[in-house]
Length: 538
Image (cartoon, rainbow, N blue to C red; front, side, top):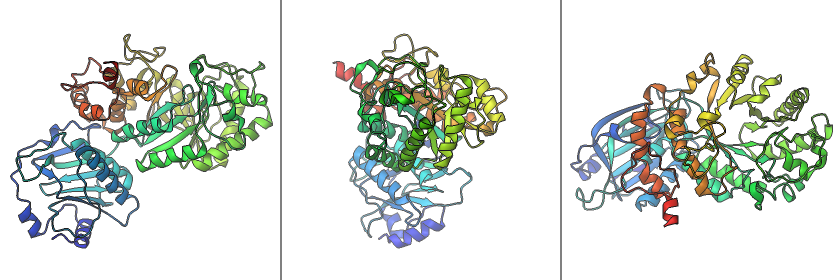
């Protein structure tokens, strides 16, 4: 019989699992040889050491977690839920003593890891036990994504009286290369529902993303409720590209998304784009407008024609309210102010504006993030610059002491078409096939840029040509999977020939989730795969 109190004390003090004699006697199964190193894990871990046996997951397995460190039990519950959804196994988490339990998964908090990274973890997989060691709940959560990827699609029904799902045995040592690994979704040009956004977050979490940037405002629509300025949603949210009905998130909706993402250890970063890309705001409140023209609602895709009035005190009073209300419901330390493509804003006005808004953002205890154009201003060294077009701006930012998020358009923009046959997307920056998306190195991409100034990478998905989850997923996947590996996996462990084989084997997950991914001909997709789009067309 397993005593849960004994388990907890043993596991907290040990880096390996050991079972008491009665469990060892129960669990004697001759497992076939497996190779953990052959598992198609994405992102690829730092180190994999196979031991050529297996852990038999079955109905006699239980999950235990550290219960003194915040978030670890929730990670165990998340794993149990995913196993139940996929395999119909209902595993207890930190349950009572149960003499029927023969194998366990233990999620343990420890400070004794080789890596200093907060999201580092180690997996020890043996015949009768799996031990997941992590410093933080975030690290534990990344570790269970690896474990989820090791779950086989089919059980082995010949080794025991009940079905067994065999997980290759061995040791995995893992940690991320970059602390910032993000994707962005433009919900302004086309509005996406709360459920559509949650689905995207779920897919990102599976591949160890930790940041989700929401582009909440643009010329075509304002998508977040600001209670002190109600016309922003009463008027500004009612349009989108092509003349659709638009939409917006109430503050309760946004808090729901923040909570949902946080349960997956993903941080939502809100963006209010300014001083350009502001037609929807100025259409709602014309005093904000600074381009000297009458403001009309806009449903096209042209950029660079709108601007706030950078010399009006009332504009900054308005922005103070906007930042204050969003900051109050956004636990992220970051607040993104946009700042790109403000072509009709005079340079002096632009610089004045950015410096004023930076102070407002800091006043509300947030760190400002902006697209690379903000580097023209005298920035505080804490502000973060998002490089998307001109590498000289990245160099300027580093010289000023600012950290940089890498989003070069012709490498990372998810709205770019894969090729000339792509059904959705644009190609003003480039066609970005799957290999081009993967085959570059953020550490050496900008010559002369110190590695210590690179915060991480982000893949933006602009929504001019898409309006629902199926179309979103067509552009995002499989490229978003490659960006996950670029952000997590060390340079020496990345190789296109190896990656494309592992990517081909993601199809069971993608198909199970009905992800409408683009079936690139560069990938030898696993046999009998399909896409959701093809099913709908049949």
